[in-house]
Length: 178
Image 1: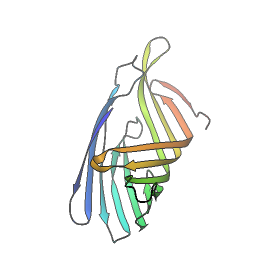
Image 2: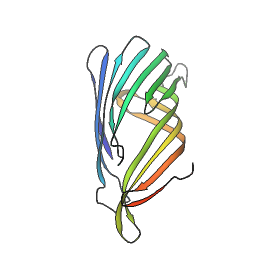
Image 3: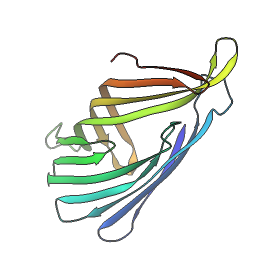
């Protein structure tokens, strides 16, 4: 998949972010309905020097939830701490100072919760093309490095639970273990 995003400072207090992406989501045996478009449109408004409000929507690669609202608040008690009290991904992040006196970029450690899932075109036994849908909740921890010119790196580990899997052309639904 490939996503292109655009950020714009709408006013002194409001920033916009819009993105669109497309990709082939399949097992590469099934092709019917494998290409999907995703996207997002979000805004943040600075309420004061510590609080921001965020809102918008995310177009998902999911069959039963095509659009998910984004809403919440961001609290920055200091320059090294960021708390996002927002759906669908609340998080707590702390800036890491790897090497004192050396500019190693803007590095953060974080923990977060997520609602996630997806939809993929698959070939079922007997040569039947179908679509598998899945949803889950995730608890993740990670490290993110932000560099000049938008080149970022990220390492993340997590725990997935509350999974649901269903097929479009089969009434069978199952809930895999955590």
